[in-house]
Structure formats: C-alpha cells, structure tokens
Length: 380
Image 1 (cartoon, rainbow, N blue to C red):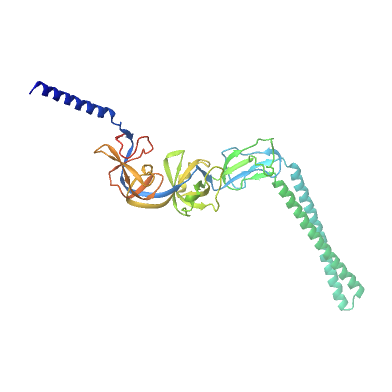
Image 2: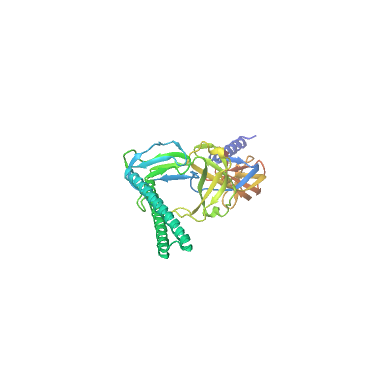
C-alpha cells in the first residue's frame, strides 16, 4: 500500500469519527417521561363534586330564645349528651312565673264561681219542676210557677256565663305559660351540645331581621350523618336517586365509605365567578361508618354511574385532546402518538376499546416540555 493511500484512509477514518462525534453531540437529549402500563380489569364511570363537600347532621338545631334577657340557668356544657325535652337554658323569668301563678289563682276562683252558679241553677231547676207538678195538681198558682221557671232559666244562663269565664281564665294560663316558655330552651331531640354562646348572667338577644347572630345553643344529632356536595350542572343531569357513591374524607385519607344518593336539589346554585352547581346528598350505606365522624368534616363524593368488568384501561391523565395517547417504545426509545377509541371514564381511569394492547406503556406526563410524537425518551 502506497504512502498516499494510507494517508487517505487515515483522513477518511478521522472524518467518519468527526461526523459520528458531531452527530452524537448534536443529537437531542431524551426527555424524562412517566409511563403507566395498559391493564385489564374493572372500571367505573363516575362524576365528582366540583368543590369540597361536607359531613352534615340529619338533624341540627341552632337555638336562641325568642326574647332577650339575662341567662339565669345554664345546666349544660359543650359536648354533653342531652335528651328530648331536657332544659338547656333559661332566662330570668320570675315576673312571668308570677303571672302564671296569678292566672292559675284566677282560674281557680273562676272555677269556684262556676260551681256555685251551676249549683244554684240546679236548685232553681228542681224548684221549677216541683212547682210545675204542683200546678198540674192545682196546688200552686200560675204566677208562682212562672217566677220559678224564669228564675231557673236565669240561673242556668249564669251557670253558662261562669263556665265561659272559667274557660277564659284557663286560656289566660295558657297565654302566661307560652310567654314563660319563650324564655326557656328545651332540647328538641336527643343529641350532642356542639356549641354554647353565653354564660350565666350574660344578656342574650334574638337575631334582628336579616342580621344573623350566633345561636345560644347548637345541638347536633350525631346518630345520623350524610354528605352534601356540589356537582357541576353538566354532570348533575346524569345523577339519579339511589345510585351508589364513594365517600372520601381528608380526615381519613386512606379510607373510603360506601354511600348512596338520597337527594338531588331541585334547583341550580349560582356563585359569582364559579360554575353553576347542584347540591347532591348521599347517605352512608353502613351506619357504623360514621361512628367516629364529626359533622363539619370536609368530604368528597364520587357518584358511580356505570361499572364495566374485564376491560382495558389507562390513566385518564394519559389521554390527550382528540383521544390520542403517546406510547413509549422500548425498541427505539421513542414516543409514538396513537389514536384510541375510549369508553366510560372517571377522573382516574379511562376504558380503551381499541388502539392499545395489554402491557403497552402510555405516557402520563404529557404536559412536560418536549414530550411529543417522535421524541427520544427515557423512563423516569
């Protein structure tokens, strides 16, 4: 081999190496992607609340006396269990108690007068009957009989008048008792005292019209709890009574509860700068589930519309606009766009009817820069 030929070969080799190095250094860096394998199993179509819902008590009473006054009795404290009819709070009401006593005494006097008048009327009736019998035997004059009959009628009217006075006096007792009851708060049902706003000797007033104030006593029935959550108006049309639901709470992040739709509000709520929603309520299927729950917990409600078994599914976040996904190919380490046909879906999973095979890997980090069809990729 001549010297010139060897030199050409060396130059060619150097050029090839330079080209290879230039290609290597100029090639695009692979993008880091997160992938999920196409799997087979059960999937559910569902809708969920747009804003956080909450745990609500089936019965809750925020109580305040209908009149103002000083708190004279407060035999309860927060957290107490109370029974129906138990005294919760009483305002100073000695004046009203005295009025009740006075009304009772007047009623007793009216009853005594009624007994006296009616007894007199009974005697007058018997006397009139006696003279009538004597008159029929010509043993008494007509004038005597007429006077006796008129006196009997007058006494009967007096009896009726005193009976009516007795009923009026009894009504005065009812009025006095009703006024007295306005100063007393009684438990309307069995429950737990959640809040007390007031102390002995403090003055409480009812809420003025249109100006809400804190209740004097707040009672919650913790034996019955449900979930109330706002559902977007578009999704609310799919919800029906009795549909199963999945309940999750921030306070129990690793646990979910089985529920059932119990009420759909018959109107749409509109909040400024927010989507219009419909309030949906769900009850717990198993009452023991809410033994440890508290009213007021934040909660999320996922309503199950349809369930399908033994289908292919992928994460919903992997589906791009136009029902396209990016598939990672281990053979060439690249991403390949593919059109798919989807079925039912929820916020987490989407059914794949065609376009993907079991075991293929789809990209879930589609929002990252550089993640596109044909891009060189590396698994995160």
